[in-house]
Image 1: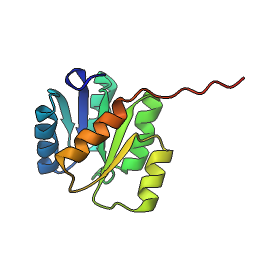
Image 2: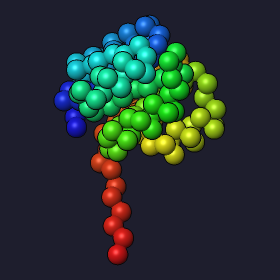
Image 3: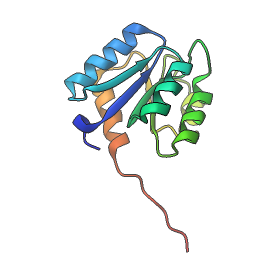
Length: 131
């Protein structure tokens, strides 16, 4: 998945966060960007389009981002989900990574951080074979 071929879903209740992220992604060459202002709309969009990367706010008005992360991973175990939050605690980071997030960014975030986390999501997943 190369950046221009990548599709992204932004799930965040703050319009200015969605707009900043959309503009940053466009500068990076990603033009297929969908947005959702709450978890219900996010699940609906993802179930129809299965975007390559989901930027998910951990605190949404209608649901908990951690439970939404688990729901998205149930729909697609290979989903690339990046958790966004203004409350960057060690516990939040650990729980998100354990639940399957491929990245975690604290708000406010920079364009460089977005680029870095996208690169991490685009790396091939290592498959371990047990005999």
